[in-house]
Amino acid sequence: MRIRTDGDHAYRRDAIERAADFYDCNKTKAVVSACDDAPHFVQAVRQVLARDDLTLEQRREIAEALSTRAVNFEVNTEIVVNTE
Image 1 (cartoon, one colour):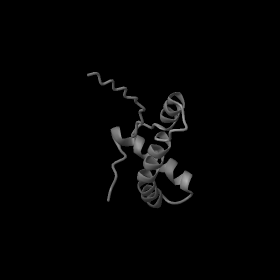
Image 2 (image 1 turned 180 degrees about the vertical axis):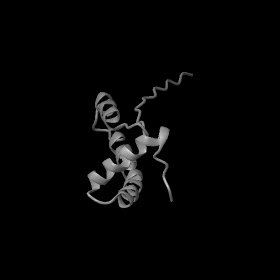
Image 3 (image 1 turned 120 degrees about the vertical axis):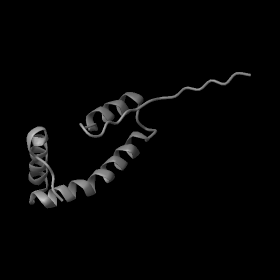
Image 4 (image 1 turned 60 degrees about the vertical axis):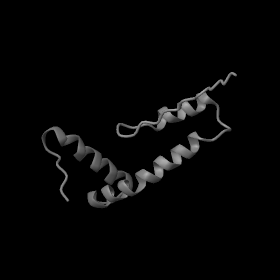
């Protein structure tokens, strides 16, 4: 697999190099590690945001702090009133 890093895609090289530094490995292993970790990270964030012991404000702060360029977490509340 080849990943274009030229021209408008130059930011990809920086992202891959940051991942390699983070995981302390070569670029190929860093890309694979990041791809393996991403779904687990997203699921963990969803579980945290679903906790009922956090206030709405806390959930929103966590969502904002953990959102990235590629993944955005939002917390919404729904209030339903049924009348007869």
